Length: 635
Image (tube, rainbow, N blue to C red; front, top):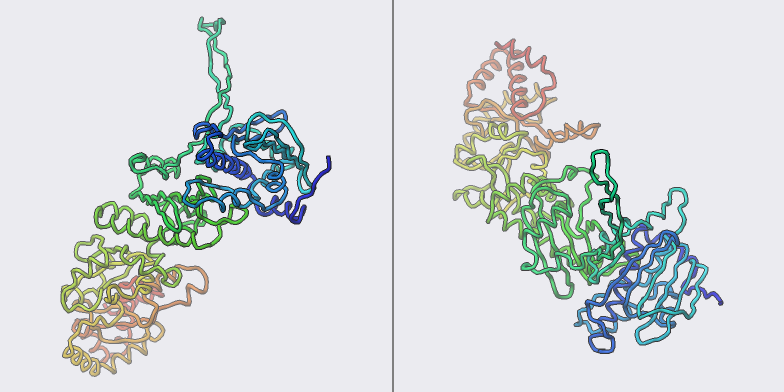
């Protein structure tokens, strides 16, 4: 029998597919089972109009058989089968697909899923096999045909015998070689594991012979007079796939409780999620999704080891375990699955093309997650606070990432502690409570709630009866700087200097006072030139003597963040410090008196006030010894 050569660049192309396109050998079984499912779909479709088929949906099945002695794995179906011509066309031409041709000829309104559309999945069998035999008998034919190949060298086609229509794909598994342990694919548990991982939701039953061992009594007795038992092994054919995924079921068929149980098992979480999101979208891009918002962050959530993304299926066949492109980085905490028959896949089925359908799904899911979180925020604040405790930082990172691209999506989700009751509040709630005439949303940033609440700069805002937001995480001020405003209300730090709270008369009076103290302020600026960019009289202090504010884009909180970074970068990034003095405080009177009568004492007071302002701002005092000595000298 003459061996025929593959068309389509022969050996080089087949080698490329086996060694490069597919990166995980285990997916070979997924591909062969998908082809079997396609073949059954075609015959099931034909049965709708051809009564001679004589099969109902319940009659269709896929069978996987393992023969360890022969080193073969066989996948059999009772689908449409292939004629000799179809074998030549479908198996002899790499990258030709009968399924794709069939689907293109179908009426789009018919409910038939065809998984394999690209004609190369079959050749993944050669990743684990050194010989593949296909025996097939087409529906309506009395003749069966056998296709055999050992790889890129070519193939043969010959007539053979086969009972009934359908196809058997017989894969002779390669011998083990070094670290390549091909024999694992001859183990029943491993094959069943792969079916459940990749093909659990193929909608036809996948049957296997499964061994069961039970212990039965014998006539023998032990020393205590008890009858001995012996193991008896028997084999039963079982369906090893679920067929109908939970996300394909209606809400009446799959309750929230059932979905939560699925979530806990699938994602190994002991706690209920705070929200379950179901999506059933039909239109230009059809898909179903079942998403979950966890109640707590996984232990590795903020590490490089964490793998974000949703499990992606195409007509019940898993394509990717974690497809990160289906959700934005800010929602990386969401877990779940997406199943669509409309996604365009490349020839490997392992890497998704960034096509229109994928982007459409991703955009829709992003909006669904936002809507669910907003619903949770209003209908169940306690659950939302549970979510916020776990993933609030991620939302803030989302605002900062990609130059604020997602800030409009995320701004309504933010929550900060409020000076009203030191409980979490949203920006929308803050704005709704703003009295008439308040221009800005005021906030105080520090490394703890207690420190933020105690900042001396808060005094002027509180004196006006205005609410303050307390920000206590490193990321907070970066997020606020990126956000800049909310509902046309600028967010302003109490440490920013000008809080916009003075009347024109008050401003004029402050300018006159500053002019009178100009010589003293210049003296302090010269004395403290290594520590401050400016010294001025404060507009915000009421009872405190001193505080530290800043000029420019780098805030004091940002400086504290960068100081924690190792290396020169953390040392170089500093805020422009502005020392503010309260002209009504006794300390200012003492400073003024010393300036007029004892400049050396005035310099010590200036140094002490500057270091006190640093301590209040959470900044380090470079020389604590000198600070202590100056305090003692003044006492």
